Length: 273
Image (cartoon, rainbow, N blue to C red; front, side, top):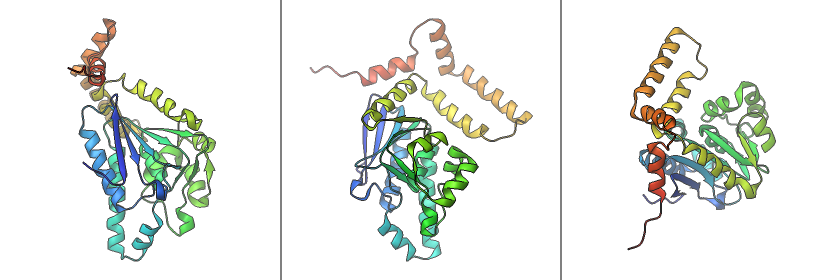
């Protein structure tokens, strides 16, 4: 599918989805939201894609919502605004629910909805010069749509400060509060992301999907007998699966698992006839 606000590049089992509106600092509008939603579905359905990297063209990762788009929404009634918010929320949830590992490659700046994108990813790597902000309060707004993901990433206490002050904070603080897990110099950002991708592709695709579902099922749940029974069922299902049997067998036989061989064959250059 052809897109006007994003770009997708696929190689070596990973798809890099670029936010591609550098002239407006990769700010959201209704077109980008719709295209991101569609692209996440496309990538999730592609068996050749083992992981998805979210990145931004130009000088910054994402500056949040486009001002002209926000102005238009401000002139619309409650129902139109709610419809638009539902679409943005559905896009973030589609990213969060991807069955494949997702990595945010962050540089320059990530404000408001841009922070929502980062928090909806599984892993985030940022350049050391990146600025962050949950800026909605300074515009008379609230960070409602991004809040489930950002709160899960940084916790209630840090959210209380940065949601209320709407102040900018540096990459070192984003690392300290858990929004990002790795920091790198800008020129080393891609190499750092590639190291993580190299680790990801060692795992089995089905196991990745089941593990992401497991995390969502267990996070912040009380340790009840029902939860323990559910966990036992999940590991038993994994052990009895084709991937589980292949993974254990390959480990004991000291050979590469089938999914790793398949990934290497898929990325091997074809010989010209």
